[in-house]
Length: 338
Image (cartoon, rainbow, N blue to C red; front, side):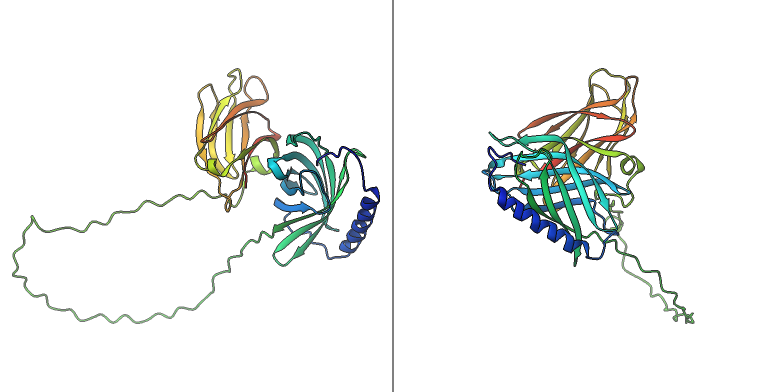
């Protein structure tokens, strides 16, 4: 969060902290929602933070949730196209519906003349109707860096529709009564082979729709999603984004697969000085955020598996250097700006 040039309103923050503690105590008495899926994209606001750049809009991604631990990314957006992006690690107490996560590394920051502060989130999970909510507080990692703030986040509940089992109906056999045969009348009309047209029925090929598979491969679910770069895409550049993948440096036999979310785009290919190319399109209603995961299939003769990914839009070109191994997938996040 934006670093203050001076600390003020200490009494105000003390009062806010007391109110938040009271809020957390009340929320802890609410029934636990341990079965809810916290993975996904959460959107919200810093409620009590006031900065020279305005009230920041907050977006939190939780990518890998295993047992009680998870990783992800936080995004803050300010007026004037200013932003902050951080990696997070966290812990989820299912019994009491408590989430605690910490910003551990900076991905990208542009606050103009201001410095930035990483921090900790202490949140309570609640479910209301078809939405999940997080309520809590953000504090800076370094005391005195800046003031804290109450935080609010929401995400729609992801429900899996169950297919009802087929009903066992007793089918009664009906007697088939043959229809009386009709006598064919002689056709005296001459047949002209040159004008007779045969009706030919052609099979229409099925249209393939890019969808995320219901079951993600183990190489995604069992390896850490390591967001190593974030590329912001403007609405004017959202279509036909070209992605080229090369070996990064010396050609040493690295083999990779690349997934766009759960969709396989490159399948176990050795990367060289010649690019392997595919295209991506972003849509604010379907996929405003897309993760391109570089999965190491082999580490080559010089571990780890390294690659150069070049993302080219209509107006810009981005070079991203990636490093994967058998424990983590190097990930590039494409983010559609509003």
